[in-house]
Length: 403
Ligand code: CTP
Image (tube, rainbow, N blue to C red; front, side):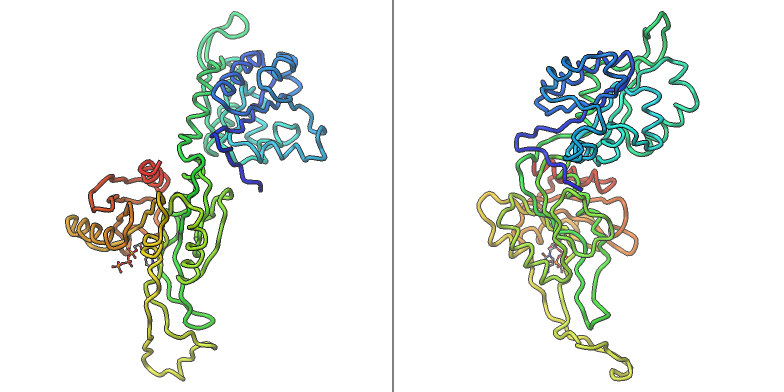
């Protein structure tokens, strides 16, 4: 998959799908609102849409060619290229027919293939008669789309095409554009290069065993995803992630603390911000057995001899270039709040970080869970933020402090 990346000015590539309803004439206003906000608009119109609004109008307003035909631009694989490039896909108006097609994943026209080829947020603005909007088929299709994370804007209630009045009127163009841009969120990290470590390292004992930890990489992956959404270029150094890494990040996979250290040093050179959310082994076996350690050869107890690994974070902080900002994490089992803050403050100073994200971990807390509760300290140990909730919202709260 091609990574959708905003250009340096924070300009989004918006695919605007227009389908065949009378409200298609209002889609001109939607295209205009995105263009005025500085975004690059590519209209994909169905044949039906072009019966209601002229191609020249849409081309003049969007400043780009209008696409309709699945069999045009085959050489450049246009049926998927537009979707892959999109940062945002908006369909306005979305007819009852289009909504049904989207719910079932039909790809019989250029808009259908574009939507299926895109991992960008999808926002639709339904427009139809009240009876069609309230029909159980449409209600079920809308519920399906919502459950997949599609944002539905409107419809408004008001005067429809004929003399009838009721819900089904497409929302106003400015409102649709604003709602769609809000889904993408703030673009305050455009042009920033962020290096993030995530997951947990594993130190081999022999060819089949390792010493590891319970970090799933969820918080690190959420940070990467949130930073990408805010426009940053992200390099993710991943150690044994249990979750998918975002496709748009540059992924560097590592296994051990030493590999993580080497990868972080290499990529730190180009980073404006470094976030060390990985759980790094503090100790590794002094020697790795060539073959499997056999219990009969060992006896009743096995004593492992371990040595310290490099402190990756402290190393990065001590060799940081001017202006580079460094964030560490501290996973602590300390139950007492005041003591937890004291440990955090000492760690922030010892590591030389700009921010330290302190979270409590335990048998049932922190690792692997979908939520997190953190306290963020500055380098001097002052509390600068507290955040609790799913790991995506905690990620955004941390990035708010860096944006
Ligand atoms: N860290 C690191 N290299 C290590 C160990 C930890 O870079 N060898 C980083 C972690 O990624 C995290 C921060 O240091 O950002 C704090 O990790 P933590 O395990 O909480 O602290 P430790 O340095 O291991 O200190 P302590 O053993 O006192 O908890």
